[in-house]
Image (tube, rainbow, N blue to C red; front, side):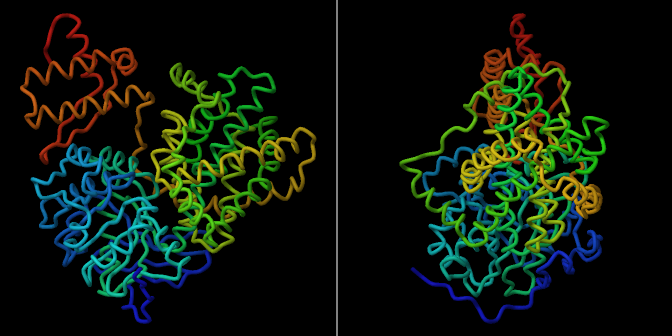
Amino acid sequence: MRLFLRSAMHAKSSLLQTRSFATNVSELSSVVFKDHLRTVQMAESKETVLPGGRDKFPLLPKAFAGIKQVGVIGWGSQGPAQAQNLRESLEGTDIKVKVGLREGSSSISKANDAGFCEDKGNLGEMFDVIKESDLVVLLISDSACVNLYPKIFPLIKPGATLGLSHGFLLGHLESVHESFPKDINVVMMAPKGMGPSVRRLYVQGKTVNGAGINASVAIHQDVTGNASEIALGWSVGVGAPYTFYTTMADEYKSDIFGERCILLGGVHGLVESLFRRYVQNGMSPEDAFKNTAECITGPLNQKISHDGIKSVYESFKGEDKIIFEKAYTAAYTPCRDIIEEVYDDVACGNEIRSVNNAVARHDRFPFGKIDQTYTWKIGEKVRAARDGNFVMNPFTAGSYVAMMMAQIDVLISHGHCYSEVANESVIESVDSLNPYMHARGVAYMVDNCSTTARLGSRKWAPRFDYILTEQAYVAVDDNKIKNEAKIMSEFKNHKIHEVLEVCSSMRPSVDIALSTCAHTGHAASLLKRRAAQLCSGYFTPNESRARIVLFACALRSKLFVMRGSRRAIGVESHNRSYVIHFSVAIKMYLNHVNGLICY
């Protein structure tokens, strides 16, 4: 195995990397984007951010100076989104976006559907694409990175840039005392949301300047002197409305950690524990689900997203406020206990080794389903019967906010900057992930994420379930909550509330729109593919028309619930854009049953 020793001499990075505590200054620096950088006050700290937007796309050729080809490697969670977004953002320039996949990959057909094809020259074998690209955006799974980096590193051209969207590989290299090749740039651009969110918000925001998912960038190694320009251009190109600074080490710690806590594993465990508690206390299963998952992903999520965490507490009056306080103070310390353990395991490398070990067992023990419990079966019925009325349960709200605040405090105590704390604990949760659970349940949220995230969620969710059930709820029932006044005072006066006020001005300019029914979402996928095939000439017009109608007919019971909706389904084919609507599909079905084949 080739060993890569750290270079003693790195070219000076234009991105400051002196920050180690939240109180220090973090700055982005850029020549290309210098007129657009903003300095914002985050509590007692100042941070520099870059607002994005489609009005910055003309600057991308300058940011990508010397780059003729961007190679996007992989087609997992982030690959499809970043490849398509970059292709569209760079349209009209001389910079090619080319996807690299394993020979015989099952994702080739999906890439073809998105317009990446070998005969167009924008799809190739992954190692060939790595060799020929000036910017290699490595988006294969973390486990694949760990297994393949000895083969990948020698293929990257000297002076080229390796781009990562997660710092997991750095964490692994540190644990085995290796490092990146010394003759390449190494940068990171980490969207604060799963790949499907990155793509969906980019598409939704085509007429809204700045729509998308916020991102953080890091310059780990700059040998050419323009690594920061490349990283910032990459972030703007995928549609980030705001770009923040971090280091790659801080990112992998906060990201792997956050997935196991409030973002995925923690909220899963919380819902399971609260659902059981409410049913045991006499609620019907349907009402119990409405007061747990539906509360969290509905009104509670909206309140935090638009008005901040403290506004949740302030929205309650009288007895409800007391219930919130009891739940919050009882849950905070048990949650922090687990959350501190998670951070320690990530920081020391244990969690990374756990992921690698689990992936090695996958051929014998593949992923199991996580939405087969009674809780989520009831959830399917509740979502199908939604009437637009949601419950804001103060006990659920207090427990959820306690977990969120415990995560915030752990990240701050370990020196993460405020923008990273807010993004990894709050913004990614409410603006990217929770909407997926709201749409179709916990599995739709968790299993749209990376393998690392899916493993961590499954591992830690039961720990949160257990500690809340055995400690937090028992303390409430026995009236033995410790340090109530102190814990509530710290919450009310916490600096994160001020930080979130600043961050609220930098949230995505549109809310993510998702189908609330798995069957309807599947219908969208099928209609989308058939429309693309029609546009590509795969069928005759009459044959295509009949096929689309048949798909609408087969799914009519689910499509009816979307009657009147004008939610668009975008179709990309041969560099042209098409749009169909669910209401059009419904009209097609109605025309069909009336003996008419017309549009």
